[in-house]
Structures are given as C-alpha cells and as structure tokens.
Length: 298
Image (cartoon, rainbow, N blue to C red):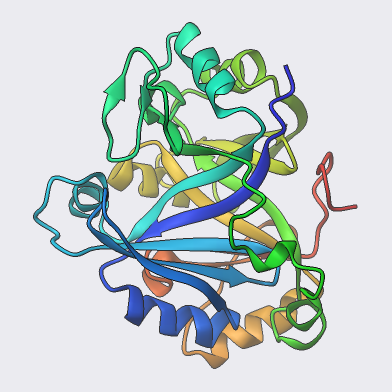
C-alpha cells in the first residue's frame, strides 16, 4: 500500500531553544515559522526552516529531570537529533500496519498502545523495532501552518544568495547495528526500494539507501571500531545520525564553516561535515553529489 509519505521535519533535542536557534539563524540563515509550548512534552518548541525546503524542529524540556520522552532522551544522549517526521495520507492505516507486523506503537507523550485510540494526532513506532530510527508519522493537514505550502514561498535565497547554497536535502542517515535487519524493515514493512549501496572510507561504514516517499534514507553500519560512526554508536547506540544537504559549492560551505570559527570534517567525494559538538548535537553534511536514486533531486 502507498501511504503517501512526505518529509515533514527533523527533530533535535537541545538544552536551550533560544541559544540553539541563534546559532541556526547565524549559520543556516534559518527562519522560525512556529514557536510554542508542547504540553505533552512540557518542552519549548520551535520550527526552523533551513535552506528553504527543510525544517528542523527543536525541543527543549522545561525540566531536564522530568520523565517526559524528550527529557529522558536529553539525559541519555545530551543535545542530539531525536527523530524524523513524515506526513502520511492515512496515519491509522499505517499505525495498524506496524502493529500487525509486531512493531510497537506509541501515542503523543510516549504512551505505548496495543489498540489504536479513536483519535490521535500522530504516532511513533518504537525505535528498537525500527533499528534505531525514531520516526514520527502525522496525517496530512492542509490547514497546518507551513510557509513551504504558500504560493509566495521561495527557496531561492538559500540556494542562490546564502553562502551555504543549499539546493535541497540529499539524505537522512541512521546509524544501525544490524544492517540486514534494517534492510528487511525498510523493504518488507515500509515497502521501500533499495536504490543504492556504498562504502565510506572516511566514516569507515557501509550503507544502504532507500527511497522513503520523497526522501532518501541511508542506513549505515560501522566497518571498523575506530571510525567516526563506530565512536558515535559507542556513545549513543543505533540512532538517527545525520542530515546531509545537496549544495552548489562545497568549498564555499567549508569557508562558511571556518568563518564561524568551526572546523569542517572532510568526507568522501569532497563532502564536508559538521561535527555534532559544533552544532548543538547535530551532524550535518554537505555534498555536491546527487545521490543515485534520489526521489526528488536530479
């Protein structure tokens, strides 16, 4: 069944939404289009457009000692990417599909269910059942405030004028311990097509790329215990690892990074990456390469 998946946003848990937001604005030229208090998380929240087409939600628990999902995540991981959210045509059908395949499902606030309630805003499959990636699925809502849906919205500034020159999201990366198991989940449960395989000498990892709706998802596993990905997994375990952008000029991106007092980490094929210690826990990559099989970028 085609569930009509379309990328909504990434989510990062940070200690201070305002402090992190200032950095995002300074580095990415981000544009905040929503800010609120999420009652079920007791967290400050902001939605930030990066590069004109990609949205990063930031959550900051009001009480880091609380037992809300975001507070527990912050204590476990520190500032870090939390999840990737998708719009879906029929959230109830997809949630039922997950339950039928033995995948645990939770409602807002983290309450796990075995039967779906009559009403729910979104649902979250258990990350241990999705090989480390925390997904969020929310039903398409034409009334939801998102400037990317407006006729007047344009991504041209971030593509043509901003120093990063972002053309769009290249791919999301999830670090996994069991690459074969993750492949079965993406293919058999999500119905994704495997579009590319790759080895990364710089990251010391092996990857599979799947087309998930309009988005390219990379699942990567370490090939050496002393690589960047292995060290990250030693600290965090299987988890959402990175977002990589397709850009016009990587050298210009590297200069922009250095101009902000940071050091770019050089990757494969001339790509560069921001270390999470430099970006409030977020690993961001930048590449001129168009990944094979990307559903949108050509």
